[in-house]
Structure formats: C-alpha cells, structure tokens
Length: 449
Image (cartoon, rainbow, N blue to C red; front, side, top):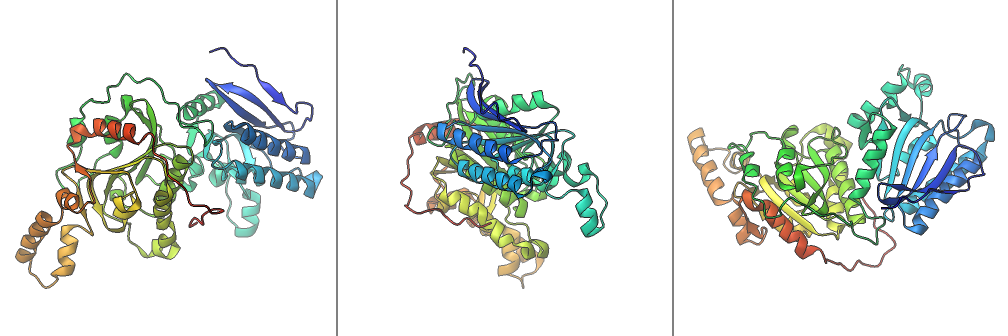
C-alpha cells in the first residue's frame, strides 16, 4: 500500500499540542502529540487543539491515538487553561463508543491530563513514565506519606494495582507497534465491523489438547490462557490488563481470521472467582467490544463471587452488577462455553443463556448449578454424618452437576467435545456475522458505577 503523507492540522498555533492525520500500519488515524518545552503544560490554545483533534476524529470517523506527556494546566495562564482542558475532556467523552480512543503515556502525565487517561478505551504506558492526579508533594502535605513519582503513579503500579495501564512497553517504538496491532483488531468507528484478515490456521482444526488441560479434580488449577491459545488462530492472544484482576482474562484474538473479544475465568488466581476488580475489568471490556462490533466468546470456570466482608462493604453488589449490565445490553454475536464449574450468581453474569447470549455450549466436564455438591449437601443435610454425606454428594453430582441436565432444560444448546470447540466457534461466528438487534429508543442507560 502506498504511504499517505501526514496531514498536519492547525500547525501554526504553537504550544504543546500538535495533531495530524497519519498512517499507522495500513490505517489512517488521528494522531495527537502532547509535549513541549514547558513539560507539556497545557495553555488555553492547547486545550482548544485537543478538543478540535478529538472532534475532527469523530467527524471523520477515524481512530484517535494520543501520545501524552504533560505537567497539567499552565499555572501562569490562570483559569483559562483549566477551561481548555475541560473543553478537551468534553470532546473526548463525545468520542466514546464512536471511534476507538487509545492513549499512550510517553512522559510524566499529571493532574487534568492524567484524568484523560480514564476516558480512553485503551492506555499504553512507556516504562519509566508516571501518571497521577495529585503528586507526591500534595500527598505528603495531606497524608504525611512520602512517595516517589514511580511509587505513586509509575507503570508497575498502574499495571498491577490501579488497572489504568492496559499495556506497558519499553519505548516509543514498541508503543507504535503495539498501537498498530491493537488497531488491526478494531474498526475505524462504530458503524463498521473489524476487517479481519486471511487465515492459514484451519477453522476445522481439532483441539483435543484443550480438554487435556482440564484437571481431573474439580479444584485442580490450570492456566486458562493455554486453553484459549489452543482455540484461536495461531495461538495468539493480545491481553489487555494482564496483570490487573488476574482472576479474569480478557483478550483480543481471531478465529478463522475474524477478530473477537475473549473473556475467561482464570482458575490460577483465587480459583477463578469474581471480585470487584474482575467485575470492573470484565464489564469494561465487554462494553468496549460491544461498542466496536467485536463478537464476544466467553469461557466459564468459576465457583462464584469471592466471599468476604471487605468486598461486601466496598460494594460487591454494585460492581458485580457491572458484568451483568454489560453483557445484558451487548448486541454483538455472543457465544459462551462452560469448561468446568459454573455456579450461582457468577454463572448468570458470565453471559449465561438468560443474559441473552446467542449460543450456549458446554464441555462434558461442565458443572452448572447453584453451588458445588459438597456445599449443597452441607446446607441441605447438615445433620448427616460423614458417610451419609459422601453418598449424598455423589447423588447430587450425578443428578444435578452435569451439562446434560442443563441441556434438557434449555440452558445449554449443545454439549460438545473439547476437540470440536474451535470448529464449533468458527461455525457459530459465521452464522452470527449478520446479527442485528433493534435497540430501544432512550437517551442513554444508567450503568452501575
């Protein structure tokens, strides 16, 4: 493909913000660079340029990629600089769900500009950068804690603790490559579907090795990413927020050359249970895939929500509802595969049949019920002795803990062998490619936050 020259816009305005329509890989993208001699301090004109860049990307239906290094609003400009930042934030919000918005932190990003990261769909941070709303000096004054820039808002913290960083990279060149790869999974805007690509990996390839990864015992651990790698094209996963909320895996991949979003419980971390962070991670990813027409494939192996006073006091009900809300309103093709355990409320929110998915599959190893046999017997037959309980557990497992009972009741469409999973998914996505849903007329929903 012939390279398209950059089209710079408002190039004579000066300041810390420059933007142009550029080509990243084979895609035309609105690229914004925020940096400057004054540590990227935003003056009123800079805020205006940020706003115009976002508005132009939205009007032209182009992905918006912003490389950010800014010390915040210019102090010597007074309230005008803050107004400029507010105008820019409003335009970025207007881009939400219309064009993909990717931010890359290339240097210190402080105060208002740091908040813009929270508005982005995806955030990439370069090593040795940092981002925070209030710096170490303010923290020391208000709390007495003495923290470095890295300790307060460095890449490691945002990758593992806050979840702000979806990816971290070594340098700007690696960031450019990563952004290019991310865009390959996404359309230019919400009116298009991802283009996809030719695939040499046969869609009818058998995957018995995926089933071999499941332990024989219900409590055995394994890495669900190994299962996903067996099923997707060339075993390739691009996993945002890999280090944050590791009990839930979210990833971009392709099946038969068709980009998809994957959501999977991770038994290696707190037995794949859902907690607050995992609910936020999953809900946000599902909403993003739905906004940009990426089919969703969900893999379930969870015993439920993680129990505990701390989580309940912090609002597990509200955050757990985010997963249910995101799936229930998603209109893209949705396929769910139960690998092993699927219990209780977590069964519902992990895109169960009753959340409106299009196809519900289960492996023979699947256990779909309110809870596990041992816990159910302890509640239903608390007065039974150990020998009686052993027999009751076996009877419960035989009578209720198998996918065929769920299939008889319509909760599962089909029980499939693990070796058939890739071909089943590819066939389902082909059939669902033309799916369209009529949305109710309303200003917007009221997502639980």
